[in-house]
Length: 251
Image (cartoon, rainbow, N blue to C red; front, side, top):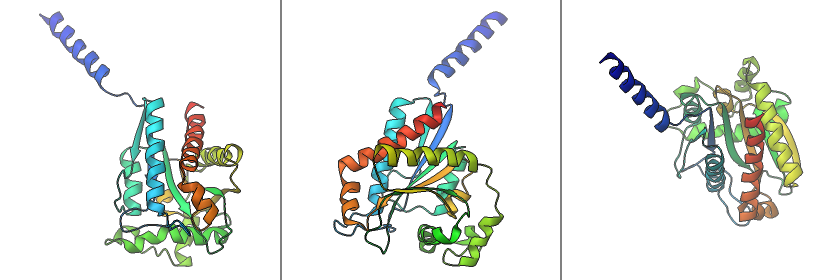
């Protein structure tokens, strides 16, 4: 009787193992902006950043899932909805993410600005990158509950001093992945190289894992907007980030 009992327990455990997905790695893909927060808007075609970000994020998620069933892929949003910055980081943390990729598209007053850049959390040359950080963090002002930011003002230079006091234990691996992404953008896609840079992004600060924020290109540049909106452009970006992920994950 006892032997039959243990046999039944072992069978149930084996069945549970067979039907339960065994994830060895979790990647969270964040499509920046959404809902009433459109992000940047294209110069000529009026492409909205929120839609472009979401399209790339969903394609990237699908490709990783198809090729790496042992990887758990989580999208912070898969529809056109507004998500607070802190909630995006919370999703990564609740899922115990091993990697966080935030997808964005750039804009600048200089209509000739072009190229891709990949950011990690940091304050190196903070003054040079402050405008980008302020723009991406400004979504806080659209949120109803801003108490989670503990008085942080995305438009105040003084607020960014706190980032200098934060030690990011994930910086080394963030840098490894960021360089892999940037190498794909420059080497394979032949995009203008704006480099791997550091900036004070709240969503990177609060994500407890290696994290990067990708700026795919400039919607304020008419030629680059056209390429970014094309199937060729989106597929190229998806393949570039995917190849970087593959190298990082299989390392």
